[in-house]
Image (tube, rainbow, N blue to C red; front, side, top):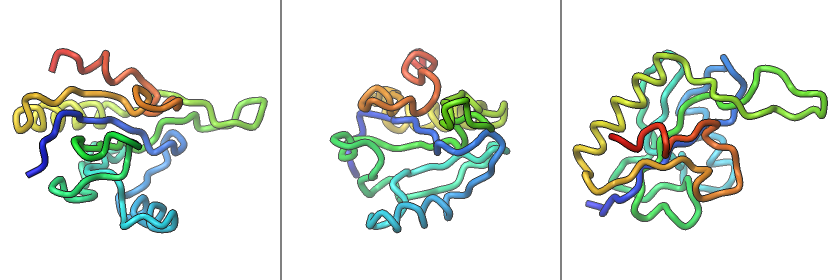
Length: 141
């Protein structure tokens, strides 16, 4: 078993309300030349948690931090419409179902890996991902 010390939350950077499956993300990641989906878990708009890469295998979700982490991705993370500059602005688009499922999943993973700290991808990258401050929101888990 891998020594897990980080639980890293991501967003799919897809438009608000646009449902995407783990299978779709798997296709995207394979097109990038990866072995498959880089996340271990994906949370759909309805709160359904899908498995991605097996937890026993190192993920491909946060450069330099994959060896000892589990990657969790919620679907969404950007506005439904582009701004005046033609960009998709970051937005916390989590549904109530996604919020509940994400918190429940993190609680279970913390029980399995008590030393693990919850982070957002943006803690390790100059990105808005996951479009909210996961480190602050889940600091008391």
